[in-house]
Amino acid sequence: MPTPAELRQQSRALREAADGETNSESKRKLAIRALALAELAEQIERTGAFIARENIERYERMLATGDLDEKLRIIVETLLAEQQEAAQVQGGVRVQPEQAPRWRMKAAELRAVADQTQDAQARLSLRRLAETYDRMAQSKEDRAARKARIRPEAG
Image (cartoon, rainbow, N blue to C red):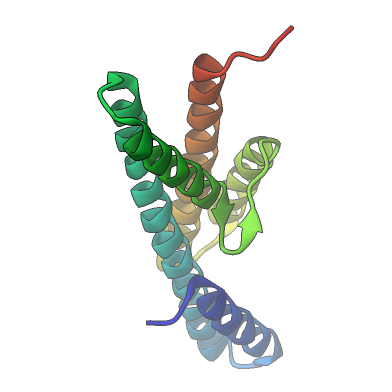
């Protein structure tokens, strides 16, 4: 199975081909395929991020019990740190806290484009992509809120 980065590269190539296409039906088919590949890349990354979040919660519960001996506690803390790092990286790009508002803005832009799109399938794909951006933003905001509750900033 191709990686999300490879899927995005294929999507870009299809978008470029669509831009150069003069036949409107061919152009539409290429654009729909490009969007589908981009959505698949997002889905693969969300699945990986979901698994990382599940692992983080499990490791945090293990540490919260206080029942671990010193060696096991160190191992679980190491695993937790690795999963937290993995959860902060999507598609090889570090996810920054300020990305949530940008993702919300991107979702709004996609909805606006969807509202102007005549093709029902393209409109649905754009709306799904907007929902994905909203979910990514919500996940980032939730994670930041949990982190703030667990480790309040000194002030």
